[in-house]
Length: 241
Image 1 (cartoon, rainbow, N blue to C red):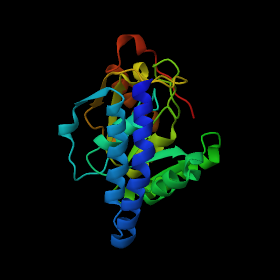
Image 2: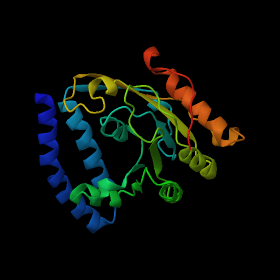
Image 3: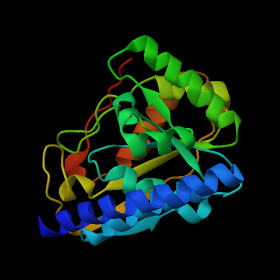
Image 4: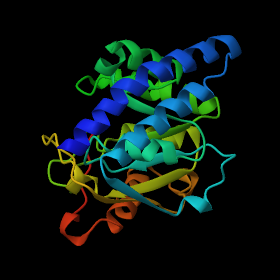
């Protein structure tokens, strides 16, 4: 609990400072990179203060000059602050639209070209895919938690089809990512963070053009992500719209 409070205290102190410096530089230069790096690495360092160590596997095989669609499992609120800073270049993410109402965070997300999504509205989901396509066309990677929400038990939930429609439309390589250990560190509905090691595994890229249909691509990505989960968190395949 103490480590968790230290992390939150650091974030509460660092966010206004990062906003002051990052926003000012962005307005002067027109470049959001400094603001992006300050927020993402500030988030990452906060998690480290909470006692979470991170092991990175497979990232060296990625070309930092290319844009990718990173598709990941999602079992904890720790996933984004751990994973996003590890992406080789700037990435956008789909986040629930309510977070855009947060004063400092919301402004930073809009400047960073993050994509708001209403998870309970199908039409809004289609709109989010359209906005994500525009982001990718700018040469920015996308990071998507393909289950659409956090898992309650560490096992993969049914995948949303929208991200795979996006991949087929854009033709951008998909990089499946398996995050292992965040469920143990901070599962859903638990506030305190348990110290430990988290592995972020970047699998070999998958070319959407090699698949004739969206569902085939989805099954391949699911099998790849699940292959690196501990045995107790593996289960049969399942999809949803």
